[in-house]
Image 1 (cartoon, rainbow, N blue to C red):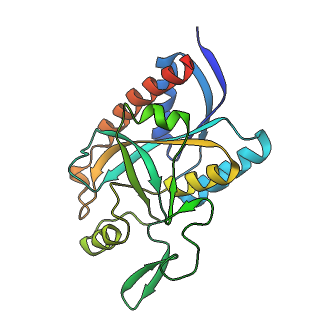
Image 2 (image 1 turned 90 degrees about the vertical axis):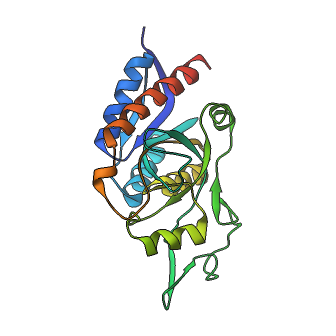
Length: 222
C-alpha cells in the first residue's frame, strides 16, 4: 500500500528530475509533496519561499537532481549528497581576479546560515544518508563552468567536488526557514571544457531514481 509522507517536500529544478522522483515514489510505495521549480537559483528560491509561506515548513526538504563533478573520484552515474554548499560565482571581478562576497568584505562569512562562507548540512537524515552516499562539497553557479579559466577560478576559490545551479539557493532557503534539508545529486558529467558528447544525463537520472527510491524507503521506515 502506498503511504503518504505528508511532511516531506522534494524540490527539483527540471521536469526530467521530477519524472525520476515520481518513479522513485512509486517504487518506494510512498507519496511526498513534489515541487518542480524550474532551473536556476532564483526559481528555486522563489518556489520554496512560496511553499513555506503557504504550507508551513516541512520537517525535511530534499533537493534531488543531477550535477557536474570536479573530481575523478565521482564519475557519471555516481550519487552523492552535499555536506555544504556555496554561492561560487557571486562576488566581485577585481580586474580579472575573482573575489567572493566574503573576501570583498561585502558579507560576513560566519553570519547565519554561513560558516566560513558555506552553508553546512546537519541533521538526522544527513547523518543517516552519509553512511550510504559520499558527502561532498558543492558549489552553486549561475553559469555552468565550461571553460578552463572559469573552472580553475571556481576550484581556486572554493575547492568543490560537485557543481549545480540551485543547491546553495535551496540550502539557504531551508536553513533560514528552519527546515532540515538534504541535497541528493547524481553525476551527469565531469566539469571540464564543455563537451556534451561526454555527458550521460539518462544514466544520471536512472541512478537518481534508484537513490531516491532507497532514501524514501528509509525515510518511510522512520
